[in-house]
Length: 129
Image (cartoon, rainbow, N blue to C red; front, side, top):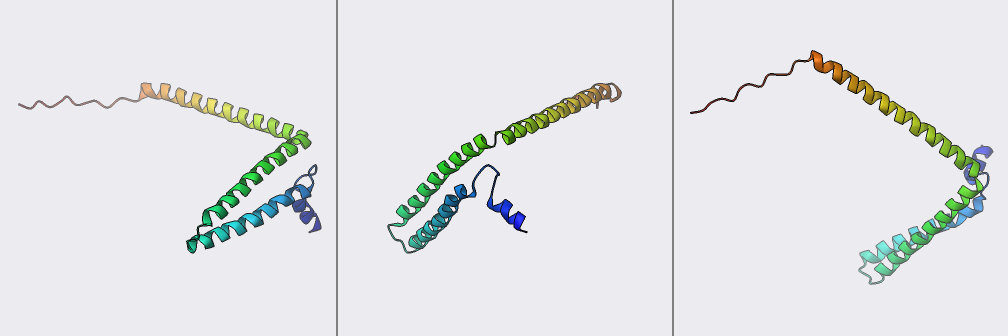
């Protein structure tokens, strides 16, 4: 059980879990601002927009911090990124070959199926006088 908790606490071997603590704090502050904004909105308080805007600004700052964390993770775990790119290349190649084979089979079946299948005859147009 302690190993499971250790895995949850440390997102990656190369990254310190303390780097993610500000995001928890941002979450708590954003929820408080959101709830406060909705309460003020229910009371028709003019400060509602300011509180909701502050929450949005906090989320924008958190997004910048997440981008910094992503760059840090990519640079510290380069071997994992190389493995991910290799796996994605293999998957894309496999599905490209699969699509080509399936389209080839469909074209072959349509070419051979055309000779056996007789088209429905179109009745001549009726003459109305």
